[in-house]
Length: 140
Image (cartoon, rainbow, N blue to C red; front, side):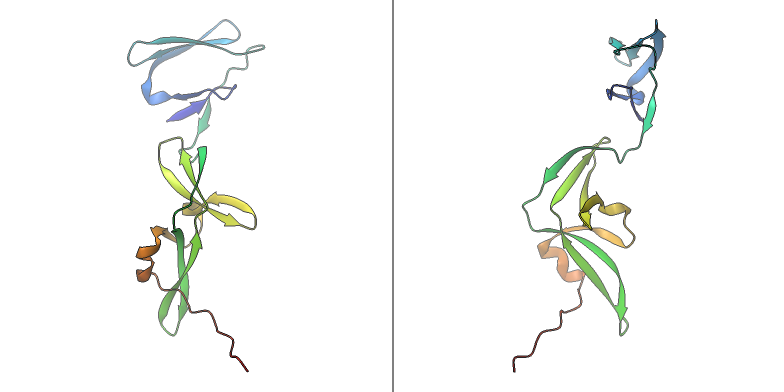
Protein backbone atom coordinates (compact mmCIF):
# COMPACT_ATOMS: atom_id res chain seq x y z
CA UNK A 1 0.00 0.00 0.00
CA UNK A 2 1.39 3.39 -0.97
CA UNK A 3 0.86 6.75 0.66
CA UNK A 4 1.94 10.27 -0.20
CA UNK A 5 3.12 12.69 2.41
CA UNK A 6 1.81 16.22 2.04
CA UNK A 7 4.83 17.29 -0.03
CA UNK A 8 4.20 14.38 -2.44
CA UNK A 9 6.99 12.18 -1.11
CA UNK A 10 5.80 8.62 -1.67
CA UNK A 11 6.20 5.88 0.91
CA UNK A 12 5.39 2.18 0.65
CA UNK A 13 3.70 1.18 3.90
CA UNK A 14 4.54 -2.48 3.28
CA UNK A 15 8.19 -1.54 3.90
CA UNK A 16 7.61 0.55 7.05
CA UNK A 17 7.92 -0.94 10.53
CA UNK A 18 7.10 2.24 12.50
CA UNK A 19 6.11 5.84 11.79
CA UNK A 20 5.74 8.61 14.41
CA UNK A 21 5.37 12.36 14.43
CA UNK A 22 8.29 14.36 15.82
CA UNK A 23 7.43 17.91 16.81
CA UNK A 24 5.03 19.87 14.62
CA UNK A 25 6.43 19.22 11.17
CA UNK A 26 8.41 15.98 11.06
CA UNK A 27 7.92 12.24 10.78
CA UNK A 28 10.37 9.59 11.93
CA UNK A 29 10.03 6.61 9.60
CA UNK A 30 11.66 3.27 10.44
CA UNK A 31 11.76 0.90 7.47
CA UNK A 32 11.74 -2.89 7.70
CA UNK A 33 15.51 -2.93 7.03
CA UNK A 34 16.05 -0.72 10.17
CA UNK A 35 16.84 2.38 8.09
CA UNK A 36 15.59 5.50 9.90
CA UNK A 37 14.50 8.56 7.91
CA UNK A 38 13.43 11.87 9.41
CA UNK A 39 10.99 13.47 6.99
CA UNK A 40 10.47 17.22 7.53
CA UNK A 41 7.98 19.40 5.72
CA UNK A 42 7.99 23.14 5.18
CA UNK A 43 5.58 24.94 7.43
CA UNK A 44 3.48 23.89 10.36
CA UNK A 45 2.19 20.40 11.20
CA UNK A 46 -0.11 19.22 8.44
CA UNK A 47 1.72 15.96 7.91
CA UNK A 48 -0.90 13.57 6.68
CA UNK A 49 -0.83 10.24 4.98
CA UNK A 50 -3.04 10.17 1.89
CA UNK A 51 -3.94 6.82 0.41
CA UNK A 52 -2.76 6.43 -3.17
CA UNK A 53 -4.36 3.80 -5.39
CA UNK A 54 -2.22 1.43 -7.37
CA UNK A 55 -3.44 3.25 -10.50
CA UNK A 56 -1.51 6.41 -9.61
CA UNK A 57 0.58 7.24 -12.68
CA UNK A 58 4.21 8.02 -11.93
CA UNK A 59 5.49 8.29 -15.50
CA UNK A 60 4.05 8.51 -19.01
CA UNK A 61 6.03 6.68 -21.69
CA UNK A 62 5.59 7.48 -25.41
CA UNK A 63 5.00 4.47 -27.67
CA UNK A 64 6.27 4.17 -31.23
CA UNK A 65 5.57 0.44 -31.72
CA UNK A 66 2.49 -0.89 -33.53
CA UNK A 67 0.52 -1.70 -30.37
CA UNK A 68 -3.25 -1.33 -30.14
CA UNK A 69 -5.89 -1.13 -27.43
CA UNK A 70 -8.73 -3.51 -28.26
CA UNK A 71 -12.31 -2.85 -27.19
CA UNK A 72 -15.15 -5.26 -27.88
CA UNK A 73 -18.86 -5.23 -27.85
CA UNK A 74 -20.55 -4.68 -31.20
CA UNK A 75 -22.42 -7.66 -32.64
CA UNK A 76 -23.54 -7.66 -36.27
CA UNK A 77 -25.27 -10.70 -37.78
CA UNK A 78 -24.23 -12.77 -34.77
CA UNK A 79 -20.54 -11.96 -35.08
CA UNK A 80 -18.60 -9.87 -32.56
CA UNK A 81 -16.52 -6.99 -33.86
CA UNK A 82 -13.85 -5.06 -32.01
CA UNK A 83 -12.53 -1.51 -32.06
CA UNK A 84 -8.74 -1.10 -32.43
CA UNK A 85 -7.05 2.06 -31.17
CA UNK A 86 -3.33 2.70 -31.58
CA UNK A 87 -1.56 3.17 -28.23
CA UNK A 88 0.32 6.46 -28.17
CA UNK A 89 1.32 6.33 -24.51
CA UNK A 90 1.82 3.86 -21.68
CA UNK A 91 1.53 4.74 -18.00
CA UNK A 92 3.93 3.39 -15.41
CA UNK A 93 1.87 3.14 -12.23
CA UNK A 94 3.09 3.36 -8.65
CA UNK A 95 2.76 -0.39 -8.11
CA UNK A 96 5.10 -1.09 -11.04
CA UNK A 97 2.47 -2.10 -13.58
CA UNK A 98 2.46 -0.69 -17.08
CA UNK A 99 -0.96 0.19 -18.51
CA UNK A 100 -1.91 1.51 -21.91
CA UNK A 101 -3.61 4.89 -22.14
CA UNK A 102 -6.63 5.61 -24.32
CA UNK A 103 -7.37 8.97 -25.93
CA UNK A 104 -10.97 9.93 -25.32
CA UNK A 105 -11.85 13.33 -26.73
CA UNK A 106 -8.36 14.72 -26.17
CA UNK A 107 -8.06 13.34 -22.61
CA UNK A 108 -6.03 10.27 -21.77
CA UNK A 109 -7.19 7.67 -19.27
CA UNK A 110 -6.16 4.15 -18.33
CA UNK A 111 -7.63 1.91 -21.02
CA UNK A 112 -8.27 -0.87 -18.51
CA UNK A 113 -10.86 1.34 -16.81
CA UNK A 114 -12.95 1.72 -20.00
CA UNK A 115 -15.94 -0.55 -20.48
CA UNK A 116 -15.26 -3.26 -23.07
CA UNK A 117 -11.45 -3.16 -22.82
CA UNK A 118 -10.01 -6.51 -23.94
CA UNK A 119 -6.31 -5.65 -23.62
CA UNK A 120 -3.47 -4.15 -25.62
CA UNK A 121 -1.86 -6.18 -28.35
CA UNK A 122 0.89 -6.14 -30.93
CA UNK A 123 -0.41 -5.58 -34.46
CA UNK A 124 0.36 -9.22 -35.34
CA UNK A 125 -2.11 -10.41 -32.69
CA UNK A 126 -5.10 -8.39 -33.90
CA UNK A 127 -6.32 -11.16 -36.21
CA UNK A 128 -8.23 -12.79 -33.37
CA UNK A 129 -10.09 -9.51 -32.78
CA UNK A 130 -11.83 -8.78 -36.11
CA UNK A 131 -13.00 -5.26 -36.72
CA UNK A 132 -15.89 -4.33 -38.92
CA UNK A 133 -14.78 -3.49 -42.43
CA UNK A 134 -15.02 0.17 -43.32
CA UNK A 135 -17.49 0.83 -46.15
CA UNK A 136 -15.59 1.53 -49.35
CA UNK A 137 -16.68 4.26 -51.72
CA UNK A 138 -17.56 3.09 -55.19
CA UNK A 139 -15.87 4.94 -58.02
CA UNK A 140 -18.37 6.26 -60.57
